[in-house]
Length: 283
Image (cartoon, rainbow, N blue to C red; front, side, top):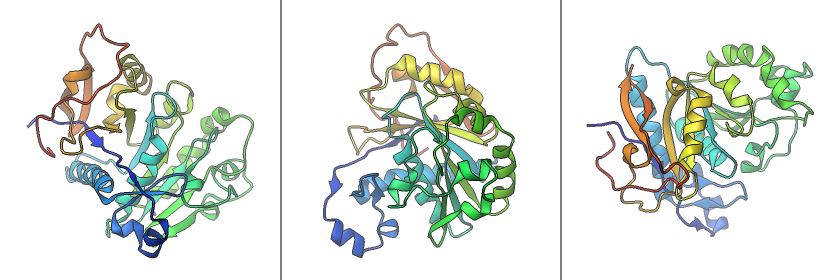
């Protein structure tokens, strides 16, 4: 069966916050939004599917997808929602803990998802004002986060420093998975740097909004070989959670167990990416 894009359908939020707060929403299967609302278990299932695909790839001896960057072509695609909820889904794995790092030092949002203040975090560790292990914040027994930290004037320069590869090297031994929330790839240079030091990158696109040419540009900027897969945000039909790459210009192939992409010649680059009919199941 041909490899398929991973698609997340975000459903209407469940506004009964008191009920959901009384329940453990992480293990009840809701997803978390930056404004404090949570969404239905049906939406959370998409992240569990994505987690299962990543874990399945890692069963292959030659694969090592444990440090994952999440980015988008432009802003407002849902990459931080994806980063947070993928990290939560991965953290349910009893084999080890998961760490979520906010590397979007320009417009950090990870702390908002968990109701935290913007205290010491990654930028402070880079500046040498705190150790990297000192800025880790536990949010569940198996999920820790590193927030962006104190605002700085030059985020690209901070990410270019050798501290980030050194930090990731130290953190790999402590966590089964590390999810890195990055700025948009076509608006900032940081994802280019980060893609070279993580194991793979997930690209988030928003259905009916993201232009195909922007997705092409983002893949070229990041590097096709570094793209593990595409997460489709705001897919319309929850009963058809997979897309045909060919519908919007991708021609997928298997390379070393990962998803790699080639682009078809397409004259409709200015058209928004749309959801296509499903042509397969989870594989």
